[in-house]
Length: 316
Ligand SMILES: Nc1ncnc2c1ncn2[C@@H]1O[C@H](COP(=O)(O)OP(=O)(O)O)[C@@H](O)[C@H]1O
Ligand SMILES: [Mg+2]
Image (cartoon, rainbow, N blue to C red; front, side, top):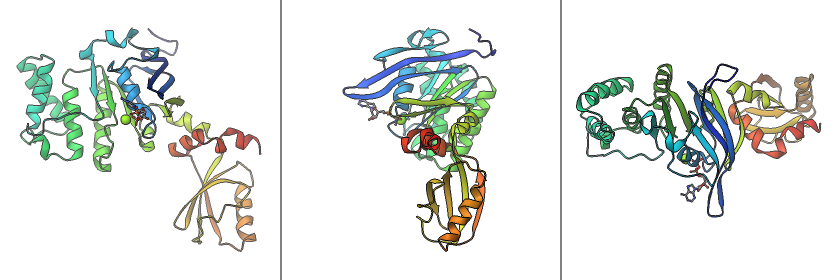
């Protein structure tokens, strides 16, 4: 099914809701994922990411709404075309890397020769070649994630779904993991990945920002940044008072990092001048001010916190 943009739809969530007793874990969630995308589901712990992905891989049924993959309901999408790396996956600690992969592949009834060829390919892709005989128990967090990914890739899925694969993994391994994802994506695999890390949102082609089971916004990282209606500035100031800007009329929010502030301000042509006058009138230090573009963290906080929402700026 081609759209006028020439982009092919892969996944469609339409008003999907899921409750656990009185708790609304997913609340009328709608969005689409196109073929060939790296699509991020980004939000804090408890936002509903894992539940959304479990619904997507048909481990859970929605209470209301529908999810289709390639235009068919999720339960009719061939299991072998779908790779899934759950948030808490099981590896057999007393089996080696090779044995874990072989075991996983045998569940899909792949024949021995195919398993042998593909496991070589996956180990080389994920940088685990040379470690085939190491016990899973003796792997670092990052290597465990790579092994889980290698296993999930053995069926050569068209769609790879990864639930918080970099959670708690060190920054260097996180970077390596993303490099692998880009390689997979270049081979044509559509990737849906969830993460609580806002900086990882920037690495996705498109992002759904979720909070309390609801979709806040879904767009490209650069388009999401356009939503931020204020201005972010970084200010160097020789003061140890973290509340220095609290009475400044133009400042909506301020965070202090030793001698440096991250400010949300209203947009104003004389902004720098006004901030400097404020500091001067307070007998404060000289300010070194520069504009910075909002981070995804800024955008998320802006969308979540009504006090700081667009109305706050419009009211000025
Ligand atoms: N099986 C379950 N039973 C009851 N509550 C659940 C269950 N799974 C998730 N939840 C709750 O649903 C909400 C969303 O959880 P989850 O989807 O795991 O969020 P995330 O992955 O973004 O951290 C949380 O409040 C969580 O406690
Ligand atoms: Mg989760």
